[in-house]
Amino acid sequence: MNFDFSFSGIKALFFDNVTIKQTIFKNTFWLAIGTTVSKLLNLFLLVYVARILGATEYGKFSFALAFISFFVIFHDFGLPTLVTREYSKNEEEKDRGEFYSIISLKILLSIAAFTIILVSSFFITTDPQIRNVILILTLFSILNGFSSVFYAVFQARQKMEYQTWLEVLQYLLISGFGIFVLFRFPSVENLSYGYLAAGLISLIFVLIFFNKKIFNLRISWQSSVWRKFLIMSWPLALTGLFGAVYNYIDSIMMGFWGMITETGWYNAAYRIIFVTYIPMGLISGSFYPALSNFFKTSIEKLQKVWDYQMESMILFSLPLMVGGIVLAPRIIYSFYPLDFTPSILAFQILILSTGLLFLYRPFFDIMIAANQQKNTFWVTVSGAVINILLNLILIPKYKLYGAAFATVIAYLLILLISVWLTSKFTPIRISYLKLLLVLVLAGLSSILMYFLISQPVVYNLNIFISVAAGALIYFVSFFILKRITRPIYEKI
Image 1 (cartoon, one colour):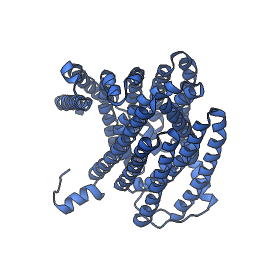
Image 2 (tube, helix red, strand yellow; image 1 turned 30 degrees about the horizontal axis):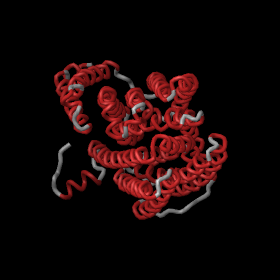
Image 3 (cartoon, helix red, strand yellow; image 1 turned 90 degrees about the horizontal axis):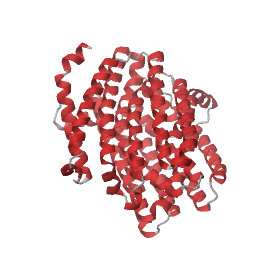
Image 4 (cartoon, one colour; image 1 turned 45 degrees about the vertical axis):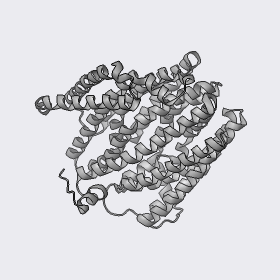
């Protein structure tokens, strides 16, 4: 891709969709900014919550967030993913009436979700403070759910810069309100009100922006459109429901069993784990629209795009696992006080699930692009059932560490099943030899990285410098090895 450094050239590079490579670069650039800034702001806010309120109060807040997130799918119902897929099939403007009816469907789903969470909150906890936090954060989650539908249209039109600006604004508001509350009125309930205020203001900005940049908004109540999208989305909705098991059922079960402090330790580790998802989200978000488009137009291009995505996931997954295990004590103590020491081992276990999730995501994306939602549903159900059973066995005995091991085993299972389903139900042909070569190169580079960051002179540096040094040696080693083995790669 040749770069034009004139004003018009820079504008085209970062704001226009010109070629496939340029569009993917542009989307990745904006998603990188939006995702990185949003996740880091969220991480630093929650670190302050843990530091100021302590492990137990942080455990209450994390328990409430996990419980709500478990029910998000009832007002999400997989609609954003479908909107992106359906609106990216061509450059012609879709029938706006459909989108207007999707908005009304979101309203109905949100009412249903709020009712379900309200009733369920009386069964999950007897603590009135936690119940209040759950209801406040539910309203915040519903507001976020509306924004995600509008973001889906931005993604379909491959205008990720719009989503980035609005997401950064939202997390700036959340962080601003959150820090103010923590220092002036410190409590988990007041913090929840800060989240709600930020969610409401950011949604207003999203509605105004969408109305100006895309098309004028209004609401339509066409039941035929509801039926159409509900029929397409129910496998995604159920997939999301069971997928929530992987991320939230462990915290919910620990909180339900009264392990509130353990929930705080566990989520302290998990919050940092969520930041390691950034590269995966960027890669997936950049490639998914192209996969959806090429599935209908060119199988050859579809294969090339998917191969590139899979290799990119391998490239990032191994150093994250190796580096995370080695630097776990430094990472935890850099963010949390000494009473969060139990979070170290939980982090080391959970980082393995990150690597497995990276490897799984390309298979999930191609199955959705190939309209195989039902298969992704059964994959997720299988893993969720195993996860629940393992939690029931391991949490009572090993507490937060049992929950972490259950997550890793569940992700391993869904990865193996997804490989088989992708080969059977999509046009993708998995080149195991090429992927094995990339895996070997990433493994050798990770070993070199391990020897560097485990040395005291590097290990005891500022954690960000240690991570940067490890990343530098890894990527330099990987690309040198790849260049050396390029003739072998091309012959496979």
